[in-house]
Amino acid sequence: MSAIDTRSPATAAARTAPDQPRRRRLERVNWPLTIILALASLTVLVPLYVTVAMAFKTSAQAVDGNALSLPTPFNPASFAEAWALTRFPVSFSVSLGVAALTVVATLLLSSFASYAIVRNWHRRFFRWSFVYLLAAMFLPFPVVALPQIKLTAMISLDNPIGVAILHAMFQLSFSVLLYSAFLRSIPVELEESARIDGASTWQIFWRIILPLLGPMNATVGIFAFLASWNDFMMPSLITADPGLQTLPVVQNIFQSQFGTNYNVAFASYLMAMAPTVIVYLFAQRWVISGVTQGAVKS
Image (cartoon, rainbow, N blue to C red; front, top):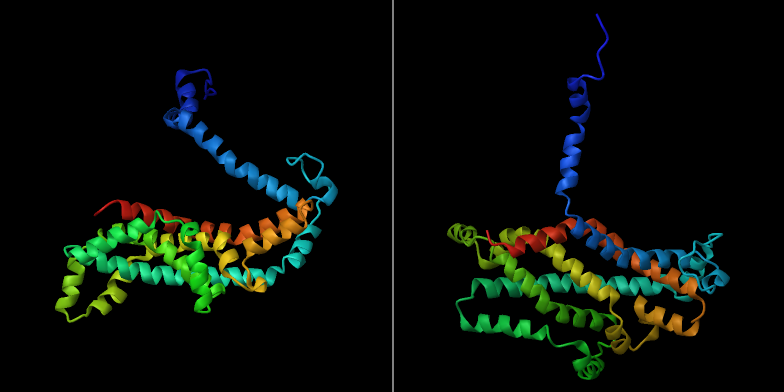
């Protein structure tokens, strides 16, 4: 039997067949949008690279004027110095406690309020309550900072607990907006069938509604956690004891005292940023799911 002729049209077609799906995929790519997204990603990747590079540099390398250069050699000692100077275990624990209390309070209060508003939308009081909460979104904290400082001092809440309560209150408006959109997509027939079986409103919420709010709970929880963890102004104004300040406030004190020690400062920033990145990486699919499901009514 003669050898296969590699120059035949059938052989050439067989060779190019696997390349056809690849070519079709390349033709379907929206290149202008891809280029825009790539350029937009650089606004995040470049500062992140500079932060990591500066954190592993020595003090001499950090002030050489070239922030984009690689650290040679690597200097992990900056993290140990930042750990000691910022009292990282204490400030990290305070920030984590404030953020955790904020998330729990935000989830409970927002879900309660949203469920009451959505299921009683036909009543004027609940409609106006929703409008009132949305109006509070346009009220920034600096406008009411002085009254809040005096009030928390009068009732002995000038501490991390008071900061967490205020964080939850200022997250309430946006969280109610998200929960309300999501709750409108849940059929009322589920609750009506449960009432026929003798379930109370409290039992319906905890056994039916709250499990269905899983994606939105993740979305609201992530937003509340990030807002609380990254907040600087409220803890710095409310907390009276400097030893109970959160990480952003402690880092500001550290930066003002050691303004030229950039490698240690960037190491402390990287340590403070790590928990938020880790939390978001683990919960991003629930965040996206909660936003998309709340945007479309089934």
